Each structure stands twice: as structure tokens, then as C-alpha cells.
Length: 276
Image 1 (cartoon, rainbow, N blue to C red):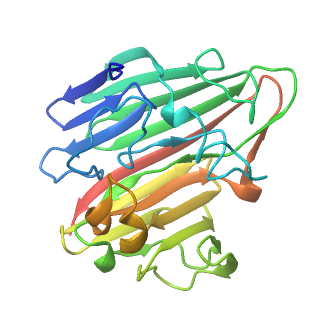
Image 2: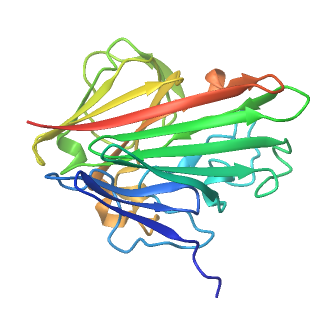
């Protein structure tokens, strides 16, 4: 049996957290005085080669099946690869971990380009993530990317997602395009790619808190929950499907990023918690 890649535990005065070298996955983050903020099924642990539906997976360099379809597996190869931890520092009360991935670590014939990918996690009273892609080749490359955050909630059927009013979105469940009107309340399987850059707030009356999501370098917000029927086929979701909503910062579909040779693009995601 292959040993699982290392798990990095963070325990401090302002938060506790866990980050895996596999996928550079921020699996857990819990600010002091709050319930856990990232969804993790009770059975999930470090599992080599099998990215969990939990924490904040890195979707890269394609999203879902890719823009042209035909990708060998969903959401790219970065989330299943073992990254190198290149820096661990303290910045005030926050622990900062920086992981790196290159084509020497992971690549695929579907996307055979040289690159340097870095994920920097700022683990403190707030959670900050920076995903930096550098094109180290001599030709432009097109990248889809998402920080696929699983936000823990008391009951997804009772949360209100605000900040998307007026945003055009593609409904991947129905294959149709719409414009969001007012707040979003989830009533069934949801998989929407919204265009917009405004902050998004998830108000959770069951856990008595608001989760605030801010991004930079992201043209899209993806909102996802598989609902009961589809979740039954996902072993690390199952009947816990109602305990999360994914609110992702992304650049996907028509908003994929084109990187010239030598260029770097950074996608940032910031998550804060406020009591009701």
C-alpha cells in the first residue's frame, strides 16, 4: 500500500487547520471560537491518489471535462498530484504554507505544457489562498482554474447566498443561460457558473453565522451542491450532502485565462466568518 503524502497540522491561538501535500489541499480550517468552516465528511483522511470532496480543492488546468471536452478526469490533474512544500512561515498570528507543482511533478497529454503552479495558504483568523500560475514555456497557454471551496453549513436548504444579483450565469444542470435575480436559495441540484467579481455572502441561520467570500483575479463564482440523489453515489458526501455549499472563485468556460510565455496569473480567495 502506498503511504499517504504528509498532512500539515496547524494549531495556533487564532485557528486550527490541516493542509495536505496531496493537491495542496486545505482540508480543514477552524477559526478560534467558531465551528469548522470547511466541509469534511467524517470518514475523510489523507488518501493517496483519491482527491476528497472536501476542504478547498485546486481545479487546474481544466475545469470539469475541460472547455473542449474529452479530458481524462474531472477538474484537472493538480488536485491529485503531490505538491512540494517550499515555505512555512509565521506572519503575525497566521501560519503561511506555500506549495509548488511543476510539469516534472504532474502533467497530462491533454495539457502538455511547462508551468510552475504555487498555492499559498494564509491560515489565521481569516483564510486566504493565492493560486499563482506561471507559463514557463515559449507559447501561450489557456488555463481553467478554480478554488473549489466546500463551505460547511447547517443545512444547505436554509442558507441564503447574496452578492450575485444581476450576474449572468450558465446553469450546468439544465444547459441554459440566465441572469440571477435577487438572492440565491438552493432548492435542488445546483451547478451554476456566475460571471461577476463582487463579494458573496452565505448567511447560515442554523449555525448562526455569515461566511464572506472575496476574490481577486477571478471572473466567475461557481455555486454547487449535488443534492441527495447524486450525492448518494459520492462516498465521501453521501447523506451529508446538506451540510455544505460550494462557493468557488474561478476562471472557466469563456473566462479561461490565456497566459503569454513568461506571464503569471494569480487567483486569490479570502474567507471570513461573522456571527449573526
